Length: 75
Image (cartoon, rainbow, N blue to C red; front, side, top):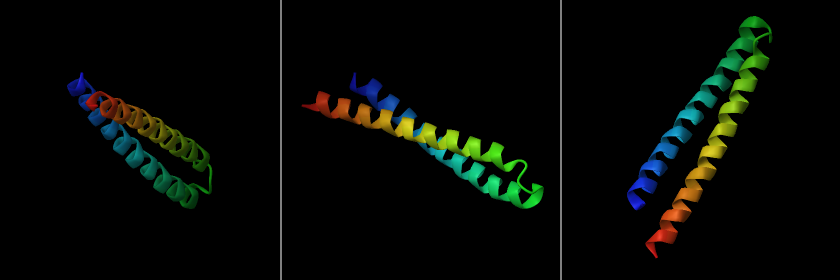
């Protein structure tokens, strides 16, 4: 059981890093789009940035739950 939880935890950690990087890239692209297009693509990029950052929060919450379960099983 602990091995499975560790694998799930590692997958969640990877998902957190992935969504963080995607959110930062969307953030940088929104500023670039604002400068180049006069703000027409900026709303699309901001929505993508918000989606990635919300995913990051969800993955972090799930990782905290898995860590709690691992600590509970270790007792």
